[in-house]
Length: 365
Ligand code: DAH
Image (tube, rainbow, N blue to C red; front, side, top):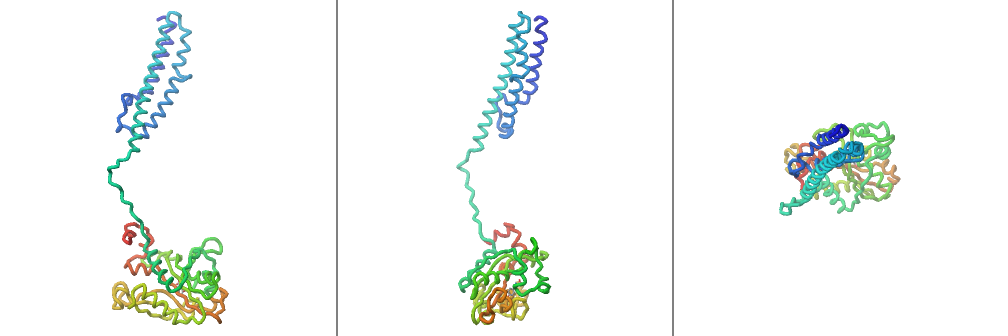
């Protein structure tokens, strides 16, 4: 080799070495990639890197391309051997790249097929059928009873104005009955309803009177959660307005309700109480479904379980909904759905109903 070829030959060696250094990490995959050495994702990544490597070492701007340009510059007697060297080096680089690419491609294809293959002999997975939430089951039982007594089921809004939650229910601003029903305020003038009694007004405005309806739904209060309280819970409201409705109808209706829910031997008891939207008002109890009034853990040894509040609709409430209290009278009641549910299933903590823990809920299928 003459002097004119020394430097270019060195450049070819440098180009080959630079390629080999970068190609080294692909070397293990030449001879075929073994499936457990690589994930599909890694292989796909490597294949992309290999494409970049090819562009860098065989492209127009690669070191070997520059060497090709030197062929014409070396002395005539060295030209043939130098040209051969460049070609062989380039061919070696391309061969290495091709082999690695083939191996990777093969590996990726096999891995994809494997991933997508289905073993039809594997046992199937049994679909787990869902079921209704205990509160929903309870609500449906209550609805069924009242629907069969001729009541319509109303579903109404959970965000309310002061008017529907309080004023129209004879609880004017400053009335102490607002305090225990403090709730969550949204935008100005709106709040989450603290009772389903709001639907009494909506129903009378919408349907006029006479009316017979129940309204199950969520209510909200600023309560600290404990085993018997939750800031969100479920009530069902009842309203019956017609000509000549008396307290006897109220007592008869709720007595019939507990007969159908707990059995015909169930007794009811009405205790005088106070609610701003009824006059007179009464708290309703029923004899314990477990001990029939003997006293047990469920009824806290009193023989009675509280059902809810009730009374004769206050004339101011009828007036607020444009119903003439001289013509029509009515009764109303409000029961706790989750409270009744907790009693029936003997839950020690009402919050279990709201935690959505499938280990708990799965017991009600
Ligand atoms: N809204 C009452 C409460 O949340 C429950 C209630 C009591 C509803 C008496 C009524 C009723 O309709 O007449 O405590």
